[in-house]
Amino acid sequence: MLKRVLAVLLAVLTLIGSCAFGEYDYDDNLTVVAMFGDQGDFVYTVETALFEKGYLQEVCVDGYFDEYTEQAVKNFQYEKGYEADGAITKLQFYWLSRKYYNEWFDRSYIVYITPNGTRYHTWNCTALENSLVVMPISMNKADGLGYLPCRRCNPTLGY
Ligand SMILES: [Zn+2]
Image (cartoon, rainbow, N blue to C red; front, side, top):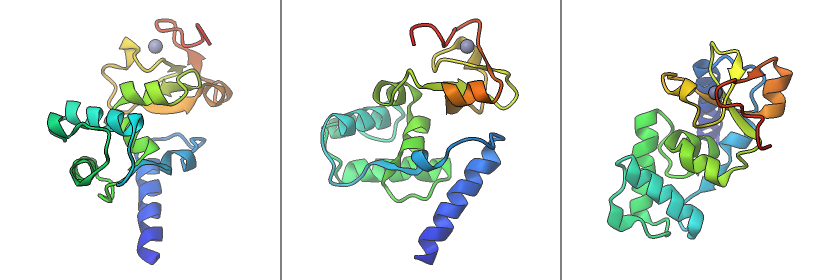
């Protein structure tokens, strides 16, 4: 129990340390979105992302979250400094693949900001290409914090 509390605390501290977004809502991102025993289209997507990033062999992309998938997730988590428990959270999935994250989680709601930026962007904006730290945030929250829509990608279009 204590170990788990410490792990969560560490994860939160890591998040706070890696960005300066005091208003950022962490809780939702700590939700586990796929773990051992799960199966289906979302697992298939997670496996595809793991394959594309070199953590999983293509033959293991089958829609079943088995021991191979779990080991691939653990390797990804270990490499990114997360607790390697094999269960992938929403935020970890975001870091694994921004592309698939946006396919599965309401893309109209989430925009992206950088620590030094003043504007928010769509996930595929070319202005984000050179940013080491990119954080997802709801458009409402970004608006509330005073961020403006990027003129290049215009994230307000189509919403
Ligand atoms: Zn942009």
